[in-house]
Image (cartoon, rainbow over all chains, first blue to last red):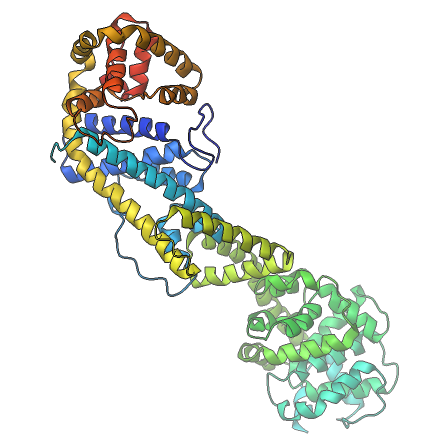
Amino acid sequence: WRAPPGTRTLTPRFGPSKPMLAFRFLRALTLVHRTAANSSNAARSRRIQRAAFASMAYSAGPRRAWSRALLCRLHFHRARRRCAGRRRAAGVPRRPSTTGSPADGLRRLVPGGTGMDYCGLLEETADYIRCLSEQVKLMQSIVDSVGPGGR
Amino acid sequence: MQHGSREVRGGMAASALHDDHGPQQIQNPGLHDDFFDQMLSGLPSAWPDLGNPKSPWDASAAQKLFRIDLAGKPPDESQPEAATEGLRYASYDEATMLASRLSQSQGSGGSSPTGEAMMLQLNNHHILPAVGLSQTAVGGGVGESGLLPLPLTLGSCGAADPRIIVETPRDEMDPPFESPDHNGGEELYNGLGGSIRAAQPGTGQHFHHPQNYGGAAAPAGVGQGPAASASSGGGTPPQKQKQKVRARRGQATDPHSIAERVRLYFSRVRAGVRSIPLRRERIAERMKALQELVPNANKTDKASMLDEIIDYVKFLQLQVKVLSMSRLGGAAAVAPLVADGPGGRAGANGAAAGGNNDSLTATEHRVAKMMEEDMGSAMQYLQGKGLCLMPISLASAISSAACRPSAGGLVPAPPAPPTSAAAAAAAESPAASSSASALTVQSAAADATAPKR
């Protein structure tokens, strides 16, 4: 994994850059707040979620297939007026992959996973998991730091 | 015999030869060529198949006809007998059609004696080697579709089409077939016979087609027809193959893509057997890395590990979703702070933290300079000092919640200094240069929080 040019990572070679992640996410978050004080909670939460994924993908850089696929999907959906139904909503029940390789479920989850062979898919999954966990930690810390402000 | 009479209705070579000789006995010891022997050895088994459209001896008879035509003129009496034997076994006109085809290509092809000439002809078309080896290599199930047009196109258009026809259904088979001269003719014929035998019901249709036609011209037309269809079928499979490649990228669960992946796997096997264990090693080490990431890594087996990984990814995505919903509260809390602007806050905090300004100012300047050149190193420096950058609004929120222990990973140091640092940064911004304000600008959410100085 190569960091985006001009940025040195603090973490070891494999892994996202936490400060950059925080930076991007917080910026995206305030953008969301600024521009969408109007919409409902559901819409705003969707926007926040999208902002989370976007900042994650940006901070991961274009070197990763999953980040590229994620950014493409985000731009595509923004151009198409945010088909929110297509978002990678976790927990949506998927039919089990009785036919085909067992990696199919993974391919559906990891963005950009359908175009890869098994080997690359595993690597992308590892990076994706790392970035996702960093994002989750970041968001959790934000929520904690802001305090029980309620919904 | 009625088979012979049916054959007589066929093309020119057959009719010509039939005029000369009636249906001959099969057991002709006069044949001296070895592949004739091969065919003769297989004859008894072929007897019940004479009426069978799927008879392998159609092709072998066609081979006989090839040889005859390639030889140009009947060298000896064995040839007409062979021809009639071919007539015996060629129940359908496609044999004669093939003969006509070969006679057409005879001018273009070499005229070396019998077996070698035929070898050359067929090797030019790259069909029989493929067929022969395919019979040995494939159980026949995969080879069906590829073998369909083969006997019909043996004499047909050019080398390209049969190759395509052979290639696309089983493209992994092709490169081994580049070298045409495999063990002489016998294997070819055996392979052809066996593979034709293997190509089961579909071939029957193609064999039935020429039956409707008669005469010399018609076999040519017939030859054109299946050849054209075969070539068109051959033309589209390469494109379809490319489309299949695209489909493979698009849908992983499509059965066509699965078959395509199987073929890809076989092509890789063919390309380099050494790469397979290398792949396995790579896969194994990546699985190990994943196991370290994912909790509950039981290491039992691959399938359960994959399920575990899938569940963990789903869990993480769900967490992001939930946190984004709960962020609304924080969002509501942060938004008014953002709208406030850091001016008032900065002033208040600056007054409170005035005492620490000097060291912090120097640090700030240093960090600002570093940020201009390299953001990462600036971050590193800050973290080394136990500081971090954060939006002003968040800093104020943290300071208001300073009693909260889990101030989060954002703030590695105890709350007070970072707050003061950020606050001091904010405080210094009115007095300091624009680079200091750049601190807040860069750290905060860009426009609304940091005042433009």
